[in-house]
Amino acid sequence: MKLQKNTLVLMITALILAIGVYFLELQRETLPGTIQGNNQVNQQRLFDFTLAEITDLTITNKGQTIEITKGDQKTSLWQIKSPENGPANDAVVDFLLSLLVDSRVNSPLKVDNNQFIEYGLHAPIATIEAKLQNQQTHQLFLGQQTFDKSSLYAYKALKEQSQLPNQPLPQVFIVPLNFQNAVDRSLSEWKKDS
Image 1 (cartoon, one colour):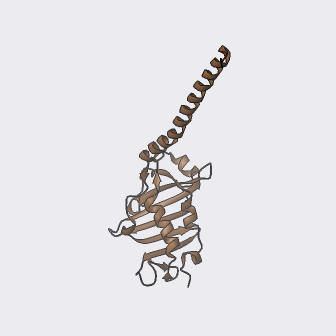
Image 2 (image 1 turned 90 degrees about the vertical axis):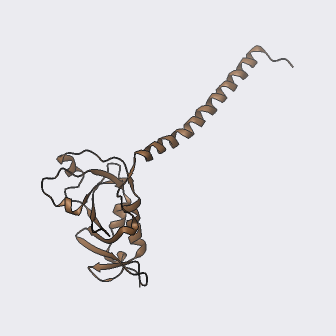
Image 3 (image 1 turned 120 degrees about the vertical axis):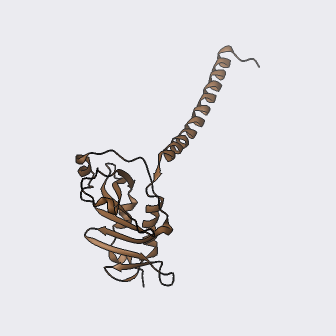
């Protein structure tokens, strides 16, 4: 069986194209992994403390302030101190704590006064304070959602620093939208079910 010259050229061309498509697809599959890897290298932890270091939490959201402290293991790992006393819902508290301890963010945004207001950070929608064993209190102020509604603008500060006048603007970060989900709860959701 003898192939015509045109048929042979078409078969070789198809083979070359198939090999080219194979290598392009192979390269495309590895490229997102490389970008993701580089993105993770540029990311840093939002806070440098660990879960074990946290002794108290204060969440202020929609005019409601809830104070939570580390309790004993018998009733609940976390106890609500204010506005009522009682065991806290450990799952709800752990969700917020895991966000504080495990969230990774890109480098902070450089903002001026106008942008600070535009991001909703002059009047934050919620504030989270985490008091540590070393008596430092770290604060996270949550602002508006980003334009694509997938994240929040936020800034962090040590409590002592946030009260000093004439300080430069805090560094603004983009944090997961889960922070809003974690703090946007009624008191009954923070309480442990009896």
